[in-house]
Image (cartoon, rainbow, N blue to C red; front, side, top):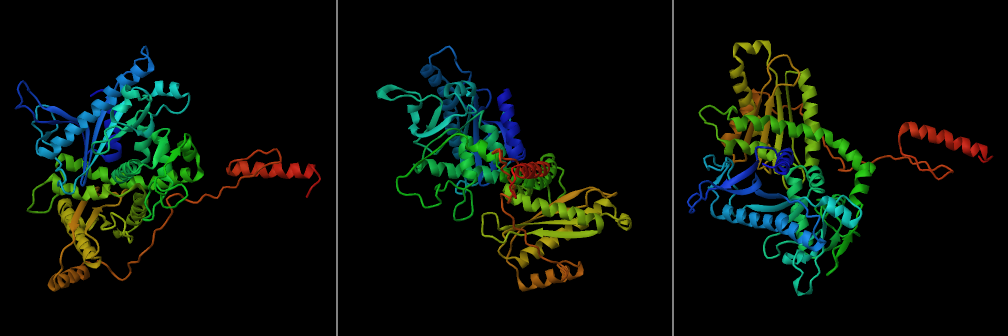
Amino acid sequence: MTDSERYLVRLGEKSFLNLWSYPNTFRDQRDHPGARQGKELCDLLVVYAPHIILFSEKTITWQINQPMPVAWSRWFRSAVADSVKQIRGAERWISQHPDLIFLDPACERKLPIALPPPADRIIHRVVVAQGAAESCRRYFGSGRGSLHIKPHIKGKAHFDSRDGREVEPFCVGDVDPQGPFVHVLDEASLDIVMRELDTITDFTAYLQKKEAFIRAGRLVKVEGEENLIAYYAVRINEQGDHDFTHPRSIAWPEGEAINIDSGGYDAFARDPQYIAKKKAERDSYVWDRLIEVFTKPLLDGTSLVPLGQTFNLQRSELGVRHMALVSRFGRRSHGKAILGAFQKGRKIDRFFRMMIDRSDKPGSDSGFFMLILNYLDWMEKWGYDDFRRKRAYLAEVYAQAILAQFPTLKRVVGIAMEAPGRDKGGSEEMLYCEQQEWSHDERAELAHECERLSIFTPNMKETTFSVPEFPEVNVLHLRLPTGERLSPNRAQRRRAKAKSRASWKKSGRT
């Protein structure tokens, strides 16, 4: 891989994790005349049922010695248009030969993750075009060097000046209007997009809303993808989701479109509420680390499986996949719950906590729980492996009890482990269990097991966790007689008050 391809892969694995991110996949075309190995499918393939993301990356050197129209046309054809062709070819191959995708050019190692069924499949297409940022910065005289988005530019109008069309350098619109929408990111905006939308749910939701926004004709232009991100991040639709709603929070009038100016993201990133949001999200990365704990044994094939079953990656990844489908905001509450469970679990031998979303948002049909059962001295008579199997059985009964008590859930994902920091043990299991039809006898048997194992005892209590995505910030800004406006740092506030009092005292006013 090239350096830029490696960088894209690192970003992909950081945001989407390596169990679902596959760089440089290949299609088996060895039956073609003269072909000795497979042909590259795309630079990065991400598979999270029902989502498939196709990334094509090109780094093309800007030809600084050429006139601007020529340099732009050549760069766009190589960096963007060729990537669009690759993505369209990959999409056709996935549709026609979903079982002939490999991880190596010899086509010996098949893609280990099953693609979603065609009826459920949602494909996202992303071009990463690099190499023009510095020239873009010089051309516009400001900004990060990210390409401007102007949806009125379509197809060949990006680089073909025939028929009296004027080519607009460093501007992209609808690069292939005859087919499904293709997103174009560049080196100036890629980091920001992957940082602000660093879960599969947040990333794909943004791509879908952006497609609808642009193809509905609501956007005239925006100076860089980062400013589009800022606009989207602070607007909420009627369902409570981020969206490209009207600036005045009204329904879009017929035929109305807007300009989004530069500087929006810089102002957004400096806002005290944004800073407070990022601070509040620190707990959410506990959820990410738990996912990573389980992806390694899944990739290695060393996960513990129930007696009588063999390891199957496609079946075993269901649990971590549904964990990974939780948005960054959802992971904030789950992470806080997990950290609290760890604290409780260090003090007692057994602790259970479940996380249920009471809303009707997508993903609320999945329940999660944490079971902490610590390995004690008296358990040594079983042996540690037997202890793990008993713990796994206990987790299974908990999972069934949750599904029986909450029929709106379609599935439950449980984690059973020992509390971090305990002297003995140090292992974890994941359980994935789907909803079922419960007969009278099954419910009676489950109730008996719950009573025998002290599951769902009367001392359980429910706690509501409801916080704003952007925390309220009590900002005290003191404007001094000099007109100076101070930031809300405590030490600065003290100095500001003292300076203000001295100024008023000197003036003779009270």
